[in-house]
Structure formats: C-alpha cells, structure tokens
Image (cartoon, rainbow, N blue to C red; front, side, top):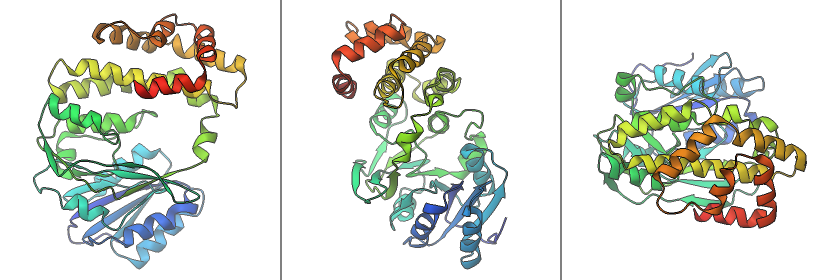
Length: 348
C-alpha cells in the first residue's frame, strides 16, 4: 500500500482495478477533477497483468489522496472488500475503473443528508467509441424514502438500485453489520450486497444528480458469445436465495414476495431472449443451452413461485416455458419472432 493519509477524509472512493490500462487514465483523471476535494481514492489493483498497477502507482506518487493496494487476483468482490477494510472515510462510494464520473459526483453524494444511511443517485450510459449518451437514469429527488415495503418498492422502480455505483454508503454501518460483497458468487453479487445493506438502513435518500458515467463497450457483446455466459449453474446460483432473504428482511412485508419472483422472472426472460438472439451459436447449440437452462431446478422454482404470486392468467410465454423443453421454447421464439419476444419482454 502507498501514501496512507494521516487524517480522516470526508469520503473514501473505492476503485477496483484489473487490466484496464486503456481506460484507467480517463477514470482517474475524472477523480482528480472532482469539485469536492476532501476524499481518498483507494485503488485496489487485483493482480493486473498489464500496466494498470503501474498507472495506479503514478497517480499515488503525484497526489497523496490516492492510495494503492496491490493484491493477488481474487475478483472484483474481493477487491471491493479489501477497499472497504482499508477505507478511512465516514462515507464510502464506488467507481469501476473502466468508467468515469462527472466533476460533481462526490459533491452530490456528500451533499445528501448527513444522517442518511444510503444516498442514491443516477447515472448516464455512454458509448465507448463516441462518448454519446445512450441512456440516462434520472433519479427523482431530493426525496427521503419510507422504511419497509413502500420504500423498497420505490427502490425497485429505480433502474440503478442493484448496483453499488452512484451511491453513498456508511462505512460504520457496513463494518458494524459485517456486510461485504460475496466473493464466491460470480453473478449477482452486487444485488446481494445491496439487498443486505438496504436491510439495515434506517434512512434512504435520493439525489437527482446523475454524475456517474457508465461506459458501454462493444466487447460486452463478444462476452455473451461465450457459452459459459449462459451456463445454468452459473446463473442459478445460491445468491438468488440469499438476495431473496435479504429483501424480505428489508421490506418486512409479505407483498415483497410477488415483486421478488417477478424480478427473477424478468431476468430469466432477458437471458433466454439474449441467447435466442445470439448469432454466434448454431440453432442446435442454442437449443442445447436452452434445454439445460430451463431444466435447472431453480428455473422450476421461479416458475412455481411466479404462478403462486401472479394475478390472473399467465401469459403465453410463461405457459410455453412451463414445458421445461428447450426445443419447444426455441421453436416458439422462432415462430413469434425474436423482435416480438423482446418487445413483449420490455412491456412486462
């Protein structure tokens, strides 16, 4: 570790870093440009094999507010957890090293009520090549949410609530309750972390600022061409049940049950229609992956609970999926048309 401050900063910004040399200067320069200056930036180099670690060291040498931790590769959750443990600020925020922030990012978070356990802001999604904004998640506010189901329901409606970025956390609350990112979960770890944290919050506030800049990469599309991206055991992990338990405790209301299973079902629809539209796979490979996916025990559990909590007759796609037959589902999507399936998914 380099350049540890002797005074306590107003906020600790945790930046997990792994093989992002092409984007790291943009990220760290945006931190240097912050209007709110009483911060520490904890750069956790998670065993990078490119120049990322050296770039981190260069910023730490130039500015004492930057601290660097070099560690063996353990994944983004372990990097964030190490940053939390090393932090010295009363507040904590997160920034992914291939993203950036506007100059008012930290000011908007610190400017929230001092007694708020969680401050939630918005973000903008930008194209990597052009820098053009393709989506803006705007948060209404300022507003304080009620504790319990009504507040959780409002959070569900915000497109960014499952992500740790664009939020301010209480370091004391995280450490007191032992809340950390699950290091053995490779998909959905952000949602589990957020659900556990929300469960111990007494006061959640919204800020209308959307200073977080989330970059959309064409590489994301190439990533989905890997069959492992659609692996049933990876997608249906124990983390979903942990998430459910945490959200039930946070809401303390039976009405949350329907929202939980509808949320899981929406995720399943995204995964199925994404697989169907993936042009890197043959029809035979798609049917094989689909069949393994829909025969997974958790897929059946989601359908079962969706049926229990749903109001009215299930739609046609739900009925087709209840066959648990990848070939039938594939033929259905082919018959109705991929675009129609996507439009129905978006309207749900």
